Image 1: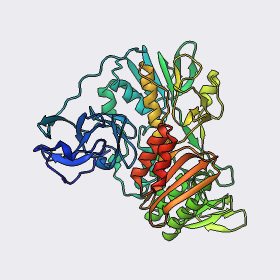
Image 2: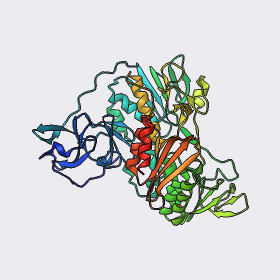
Image 3: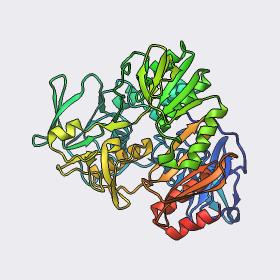
Image 4: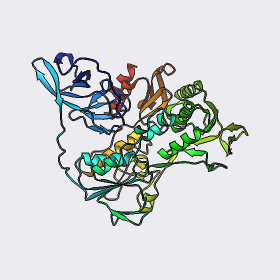
Length: 515
């Protein structure tokens, strides 16, 4: 991603500031030699200085959270190591600059940039790694393996010629026409070539030989592995209705899908979005920005009620209606024709473009054929390992233990972090994957952030004002906070995420009580 420029503000840290100006764990924004820098004193007294702009989309790290020797971006929760500047938690890939810090009596100054020392060889090293799927889990796994010092052969096999890409943007700014093309690729072919990661895009995996430790490709090749990651992701569901396979009826998963919708939108005046899911509503917003007449059709009475509750769902509907989106809720499509969609009450809705956003299904066919355990996803343990030796699963396809239950979570950041976790486990530096799920959803100028996982809750509470763009929503099950959503309170969401990670109910309640 392109880093957004930051204006210089605050003290000149190259000249120095009094140590007394630093509060433990609170970033101090300043600058040094023309670059924005945050100076941080950890609670133990150690000092760090790193670049002030997140390398994902330029989020202000000075407004972020310092925890566990990292700083977390308030926008999309990327994590950077305080001592090295390395991006250690998705969605960021690139490091931020890291600077020397010098004490001089009662003051401290920021000096020259630091060069990160080479990573020590990993404790263990598989003979080779094959990664099936070049989405976020696969791409982040391949890159993290190199960051962790793995020098063996890595083969990354993708069935989408455009992968790896920044998929969340495909339904947001890119689809709306407000994000440049260069934001979309995570890495280019040169990046993988320089790091000796073989990126296979001309063939797909057709079978797994777990006993023989190899994967079979559609071009008749077989690639052996010492460790294998299945990151096959999920595929969009198409409703089996008359006209559902017409050329102007699209789903959205890949860059090619987004481009096809953009191309059709440039020729159309009206669009029907089937499904009031996050993807469906983001598509609706993007098409409205492009000037199309948009109608959302969905069987539920309130958009997003199952995930965010009725009050937030009604708020999201108001956001869209204020921009001219029409809703046909409590309705299902019966038939799609060339220029309209007929609903189950015989209403015909104009739709020269139709987008289905009715969910996805995990791609488990390879795992099932190989005899791996599958239960609404590939079943793995808390280190994302299947029962087959040295075989892992991550991302949308993985069903893993979280907070006392087996879950499969379809969040891009979760998939990317799982890929990072698998890489570290492969080289002997792993630990149980217990990251708190996080996602964000953008609707015009409003972003909803969410941490935790509440498949079920019996009470929700809104603190603040959703309509004023300043609110915190708490989801409880039997009195316990399972998830938190915010609008306009990025810092609160970071704090709630950390409290959930620490399983510190008291801390979480204190955060909530202050809202």
